[in-house]
Image 1 (tube, one colour):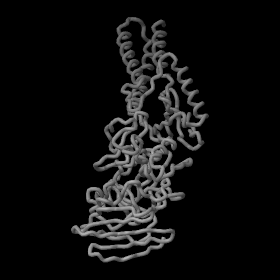
Image 2 (cartoon, rainbow, N blue to C red):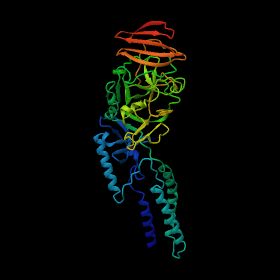
Image 3 (cartoon, helix red, strand yellow):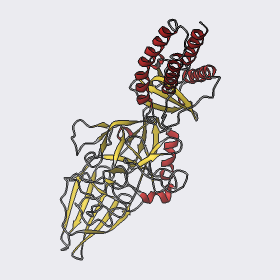
Image 4 (cartoon, rainbow, N blue to C red):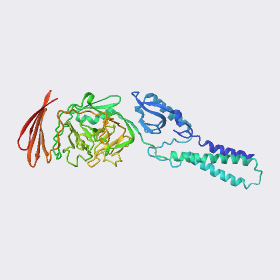
Length: 460
């Protein structure tokens, strides 16, 4: 009977080792602890159970089996209290051992349950071997040992299944709430051109003229005869950046999408389009862009097709743009001024604080290879000429023009705050477009390379 008691105590001891409380562990059902998590402004953050708390960030296991994280300071006071109680509860239950937090991108190769089951299996084999050699009556011990062995055989495949599920890389944060005050700082160096504001959902960039501070159009060798006119990106037509970024479940490649409309907004208020035009050609390589990476569209709207890396001279280590999925775009350096580190397939990477951003480079894909964040597509458009919503609209004042073969733009000058003059050359002969505007109309004077002049007026 003494051996029977010892065996029972040993089995009981190893069985209780698996009853250890840890976030989403085997000793609790995480689904039963689901809750609605909210931000300080009471807007929805996520639905799911507490996963763990690390470096002042709360990690949540969502009902969609994703892991998302937020700074605890962004969450409501009720959620802050809940997290404090959860952390204290886990510390109490695991007071006999230190709490092990699984860091992002870490892998648990040998989960606790699997180790325990293997140890119990070895112990059972040892006991069968020892007891089979004893000369005492084993009629009482064998049934208990048989039951324990059958239980182990039942537990072993479960442990293996847990191993295959747990032995995965922890998913990095999939939802990020942007701080509008941090976003606003990127636009401060260009406050003479843009103003910013925000509400609960979007960060808005108002650009009354849609013009940059630098010169425009010079250097274009593949010109469709458009010129820049003011575009009122203000009020309800301001550019909108979401305050909440969410990783897309099916990310869209810029090679086969977004060939209409903007993909990002530069810190000076100028929209940045896909580097590929609507024919799938690299706009920069075929000469469609000026010395600053921009040109004018069919509405005579000035926009970039490659990121304006030259803004880093003014922006310093601040973002030079924000993508329409809510992620920042930096130049050649990181936010701390260090050199850009290796980029991922999206053309960006995570920073040391867990946030994500893109980088601008001087070669394709230039800024965004694949849109990492979830975006809403305009249902009236189809790939590859689909566009992201919300999207500020442009206002054309004249019919779209056609390419002028062999033309190169050599000069663009400001005659007054409301008048410009463009000079182009074909076979070393110069042509000009002079234009101005007032409250009601635009007046264009066209002088071709033969010296012939025509004037056209367009109503606003």
